[in-house]
Image 1 (cartoon, rainbow, N blue to C red):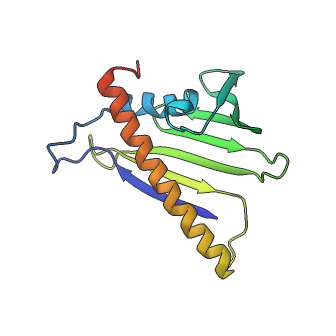
Image 2: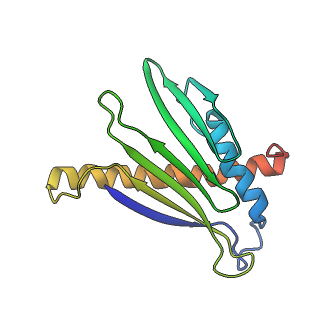
Length: 156
């Protein structure tokens, strides 16, 4: 399943939403990668290793399930998650890209690829639609949490 969607960050027509700067948004996306427990309540543990300015390796533990992935950074632009095939988990990826079609009009594009071929199987299509909705909700929560952390001053 390949899937992408866009979330608007700044809305000049809505004075109730504080505008974020690209820097604030970037720090929030990096925090999502390096402190994922703030964003995923079911995550039991995250261990970081081989951290550089360009990437970090992670081990995520959900109960008995352990997932290893690599997060790479294109500063101020993109955070890319790559989960290599491991056990019964196929290769998959997620990119979060900051887009700015005009000054201060920030968006984040979330792009998912589970590595599976696109099929027309009705049951799989139904399941994929459910996953898309879950991903969208999780991504909306990610932006909400980033906003909360910025208000609290936690993204510095």
